[in-house]
Length: 436
Image 1: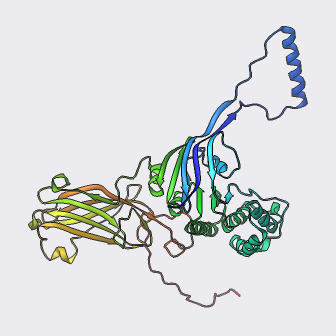
Image 2: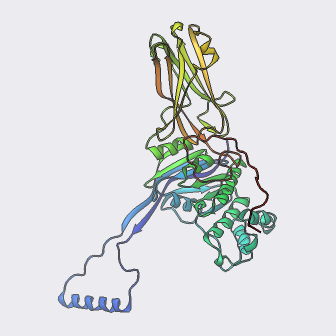
Image 3: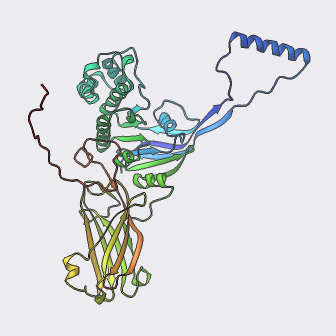
């Protein structure tokens, strides 16, 4: 088991929120206050009571552990405490109670421009950030060209940072944090500043960071990015941890207010407890990857198999398996059945346990949760003999690095399905009339 790199125990952060009032007092305000106090002294009237500051707990009783190599997404509504937690972990602010222990060097990308000195050039800020992260100058120099190329800042690297746009700040800051040899990387919701191409590079780089055994804590409102990057997610609400588990399940619970219904495998031990009638009863429904292993989560590029076993009790009825697949919004993606196969057309199946398997190719389903209704029907009398709604569920994750349907685009992608269609590209005319 990998060593623990982050340990949070009963962490709390309290703020005092004072009542509304002027941010500063002018000389006229001060003289008016003195006159009012003098008048009260002569009239012997008590001064009005000052409003007590309100106590607000941004975090309360937060506990969890993160191990080396884990990529953890912190999700929740605005004001849930995500950024506060990240600032405590990055030693930017102190907790009010509890503890947060970190083992290993860390890089943090919390806000655009954090850690940059506006009067220094981009080049000088790269070395300054490296020094802040505890890196030797020789180590920063060794990675310098790679950092600048990743950020696309070759032209402006010797320009003072005060002249940078927010996008330029973010690109260079992310490049520094991701390329220097820190064991832990904290990333707040800053990728939204960049363009689509840079977002893709950032997401791909964060995947590489996690694959290299470094710990990543990622705060984002982009649930597709959390599913893609993170194996685990922690959901915060009003400063408390309300869910901690597999990213696909926690994200689904956050978006839809509940846990995933169903799992990758559903089985019934005997016909007496299985759904069905005197013709057929379901035995099992399974979602499997191409190796035959259960697949609660599948890469969008890989095929997935849905396997249905049923007890065939009356062969003359010629039972057929059908599947209905639904996305997270409840839209039916498609329905399919096995009565078009040669095995079904060849005649009734033998009595006993029967297996029917549907193969769904890679680059066909869109990313997100997919639930499956499984049924056994006979079509000579058009009768449904056994049906189980939401029998199984699995999540499609788009981790493609430019070789999937979305190509280099990293943003949201519409559509209930995402087929990889054939395209033909060619030039019709080498010249454009009227254009020199």
